[in-house]
Image 1 (tube, rainbow, N blue to C red):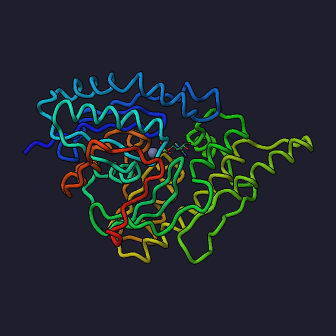
Image 2: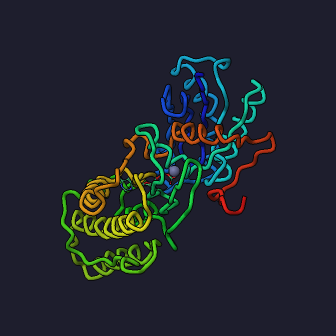
Image 3: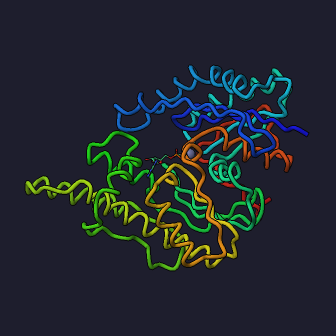
Length: 341
Ligand code: KG4
Ligand code: ZN
């Protein structure tokens, strides 16, 4: 049977609506980015984000249906991001999804945004379990062990800043536009790792991360140099910062895959677009984990988008976990804990 899910994502600063067939095929994936509106503030302004979502959401729904060449009658269900994210932003997507589901008598599927990031990989490759996911975004840095579809066990996470957050804060100090991960990645490829930055928790016997010390070391170096009137080499600064982030991410991910018997490693979230991370992780997996297949979703599926929400929703639907009309946004939604169920 042809299963068509209309998926809605509005957790942060992208309004996105997609139509996904059978959990794997993208019929449409409309993404309306608000980045230009937030850039002048140096970060996402929640109130501004909510207003943009209100303006964009119905247009995106119409466009997604039109581009997919399907009608409302063809749809099987409506899926929506429940959290984590900005509460005002989430509420716009949830309200739209509820109204749409109610008006057309369709089932409503609640989706965890981070599960969506992982399931983006399913749009390009069949998933084989058990698998490990390295989730690296603007708000999260986690190693997630998945024994089977829909089962998530966080085995390690950041104790302070997320990897993407560190990129954005460091970029701000350098006067780069928000979000600065992509630009730092590009600069890093033109420079050398010449400045000494810490690799926090690298040798500790756990799978946790910490990036706030690196951020402080970076900011101190830049401020001290400014005070002394010393010139710093921008591309080398970027390369040294990036090497520090990547060294820890790669080492801990490899160790996690050695300890857990995984078939695949999925790298997901906005920072999964990082070229340096892709290169280093690919080599490390080839060298140390020849039995593990590493999957990097294409760049357009690494950042926030509704296609990944539709892919995750397919699994939620198959497990019968539907939402009622009292579904509420949960800005700090965590993965369901199987043991507590
Ligand atoms: O997953 P995402 O789109 O939104 C969240 O759910 O947070 O991730 C956005 C983050 C931003 O911090 C951005 O700077 C970072 O991903 N990012 C990158 C790159 N592209 C985006 N970080 C490092 N290298 C990149 N190429
Ligand atoms: Zn995200």
